[in-house]
Image (cartoon, rainbow, N blue to C red; front, side, top):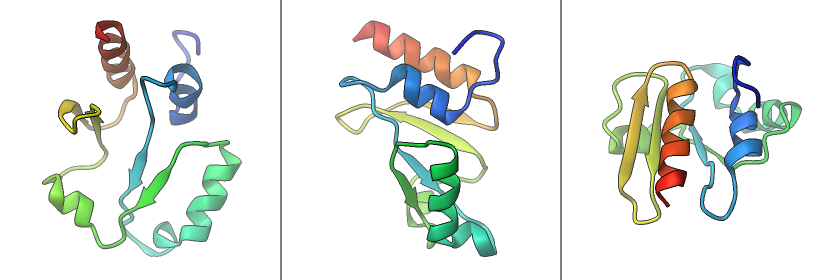
Length: 105
């Protein structure tokens, strides 16, 4: 991934995923087809997304995290501690947080 390019979750997967970093996503569907597991699986396949995608059709994870906006991204360490949170679009701050956390060990 080159600076200046618009990163995607697949870019993050391909650049950062290793033994010290795993990418797991939770899809919070709102309407119709966005709740259909086969549609989500097809879209993930089309994007070559090799990371797990949980589907929160009943919004139990959404509620457990107290989300009130979309999109929201959490960086959670192996002990379950939230290390960063970003509300709103844009992956650059997330990439910066990942790089900082990986550098810190």
